[in-house]
Length: 458
Ligand code: BES
Ligand code: MN
Ligand code: ZN
Image: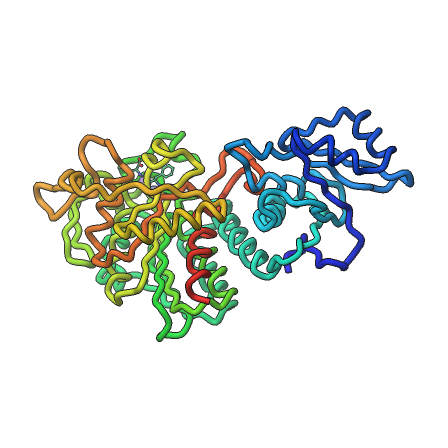
């Protein structure tokens, strides 16, 4: 189990009392006189996110008060109690009464404690939580592991996370779960996946397609695809410095697919899992692909390059074509695909696209119950015409620059025939720390998709 989770009875625990503006008076009426006096003297106010450590007469900890939003507050953060894992002193704690959602609170407690400690020592994490009654600690643990794997891969800078290192990460995960990995490189890549090869051609670090397979062939086929651009300079259509600064995270889709794959395999879900990762460096050199180049994609459609910075959709096009060939029951792709998705919905709310209305509704529900927010945007067919090219079957960008996230999704759609396909345009980053979501890499949408799968394929 996760090192911060303790089993009930494993050790004495310190109670955490959740209070709201309206429950506060009643809650502290029930505590010891001295403790109540301390709470008053300390001037504790039962506001959301406030906490107070209350001493016992012998100087040890008697308990902790933690403020939550009032019950009638329309926007409540179910991850808020998670903040306690970095606020509390060393010790083992338990929830003495219920936060809004005990499972999400416990999950957030562990997610909140994450640190990226590859290049310097982390802070000690010594506040532990007794797993609340009825929760599956093993399942929470594998979810936290998947999220942490994803965060580590995204946080790792591009000098240590190129296409080869991404392949290593996939192989390490595969070994752990007895999965098979096939990698297509070099001339075979150029022949079979011309768009992936073209995008990666400018870098010394060879582009590749990573193809991981796991599970019983007779089980429902689930194929995950993750955009693996290890660094996105924009290519010859170079990004300005501000836009390039954080482009180590452009393999966030790949990291998310691997994090989710860990959850699926560790849980032993009854699926035939396939994970496809086109891994490249979008670099600048004399061998880079160029604006107005035309390539014949795996599917056979010819694509004119309108902009080398719209590289993610090119990778996904060839990967989606491959995924579609063996008619899986579901294809899910994750990609840090467009700045436009951020303009529309911001860093925390990734849009998803699918033609399957029932699936969309189910995903929205999973996103809500997992507090892994998603929002549906349309595959708005009338905009399809904007992808027309005068010389090829289609262009990789539209003129005009409006509805960028939809245009990118419509581009992808040309390479898929099944309607059991979901495309997620993720950000993979938390700009400023919030409970359960430390600043830096974030694993978006994987928990929601895992919940959807786990409810159907146990
Ligand atoms: N990786 C970027 C998209 C991106 C930028 C995601 C910032 C998250 C944050 C992608 O490869 C890209 O550059 N997209 C272009 C597309 C444009 C050239 C049509 C964009 O969004 O500007
Ligand atoms: Mn780009
Ligand atoms: Zn990119």
